[in-house]
Image (tube, rainbow, N blue to C red; front, top):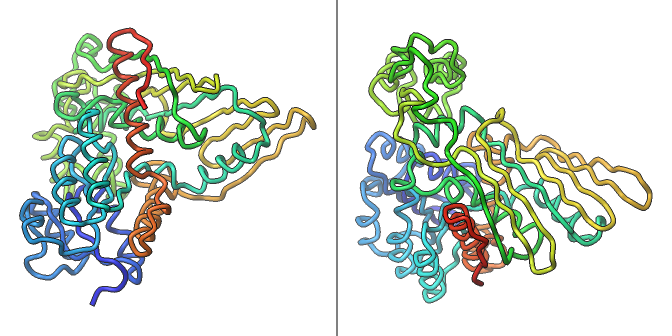
Length: 418
């Protein structure tokens, strides 16, 4: 018999598989008992990893929902545009829900999700993993303690990384707004949610600027081919798929992002993927349209201001933040905090130890584990207060993202509806 709570998983991609892996490491607290995943290879591998009973691995979440409530909770990790319907169905069945971010892509769908889980009386945790990291806990403690006084302004940077942009947002699933969503919603809803959480309040007004500047046909090098495997100038291009994925395979780095391309980690399988699949395309010959850099400016009811910058054109690095208060300044880089005191004119360095990189492969600096720990604890005890990213807080941060995108598109300053 399973110990702890039981989980069903909808979507056994990188996020669903990663969240479910927490249960394998904590079998006394949670057990996965069912999965819905349309891709046969991933479904079978997931079922084997979790020793699922025959018939509990299905190809469609509707099949799983039709069986009624077979678990205490469900992890919904489908692609961004496919969140609303499974949430409504599983909430009505009484499942507690961990929903991968973003919760939905429109204000109406976000509000429908909130209404559904509140009407059903179930716990909802949205996958804003940055709220759950030890780094965030330490930083928020400094801010809440009053050590730097009242917060006046904030600078926050998300350095996406040149190869990550090419992988996910030029060649990959999140390259087009009509097939996925905006860059700000897909990648940076984490950050606008995080700023709201750290400051303890949502912004009231927002403006934004950004565009797709580099990854366009006009910037294609002379002599470039449609695919990196056929390209005469591939060895001079920093975005070479042949080099990036080939190096990872040669080094035995079989996790994300290589696992998105292939299930069989062999040179032949990779060559086939690069020759036939989307990840072997020239970054200047794709059908992408999401921005590769964006700035968001926010104003809070207190008069405090914040700027957020997302850019593709960086090395892969952790997010960086500077918070300016009336009594001091705080600087953080994901690994340590530096707190400068205006009165004593001294600086304290707060080291946090190794938590892993702030990306999928690194478990988001402990955030993935923290999210699952809190959600499972909330379900086991019936205490939704353990969840830091519940329905109302997540709705508010999503409204900020949607307002920022309106501001970018129309050149406006948007007021955020509560």
